[in-house]
Length: 307
Image (tube, rainbow, N blue to C red; front, side, top):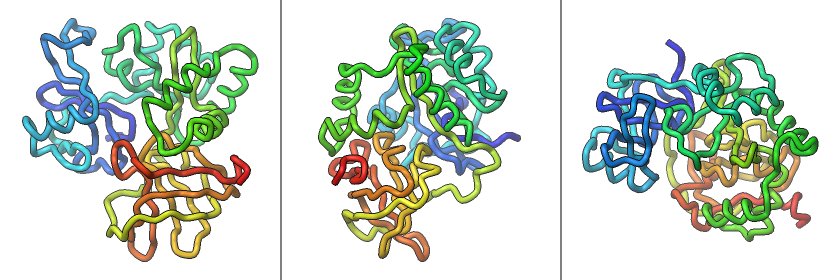
């Protein structure tokens, strides 16, 4: 059986659809509830069935009330309970057949089969006119796609982010850094843009041959800390969690569980990071994004902003 990976979707026995949010899914799948069949719901599936979309807080309340056996830091569904697994790379041809924006992005990237897909509402067949495009690119091919987004914007094949869109993203995320600092970091990530006026992003997921050693589980909490450190490896900086291996007197890794601080720094740069320190075996990791809003927690490249 193929592994269930980050950004897949799974369906439980009642037809509820969940976004997979972890890699450690051998016995039970770590995920977040997104869509539930509901006659009054605002989304309509391919068969005509209506669904309600759940945001983060409502999803946790729904699970706690109706399916407490799945409740936890993330929802955990036993593999034996799964009715269906939707994999972005396996469904991409179906999605592209009916979505011109996805077709244009596939034409831009021209990546090998099984290295690119599409997740979110398009994967579930529950998109509407305002739905974004969430492309998934696997392993090293993500960096090829990143370079092609940059080149595509320069060539005019795709649209860059407008100032109005940057402001919208900033206000939605409400990060603990100033707007100008946020935009300075985001503009060099080249992981988002617009195609035919529709917002898209490219999301990193590990390839199937690189699933060993994925950070999992909560360590012993040692308190809040702010550090200055040099990034020595940022090859998994766009993963979830984003991983920065750092040179520091006591901290070995900085992990971000919030998308805001993925891809925030390059190898060789000095970062300032504020979060919660955890002990993992003989190592200490600084965790950023310990709450949904990540209030007061951040990663900033001091090298980028010239400090």
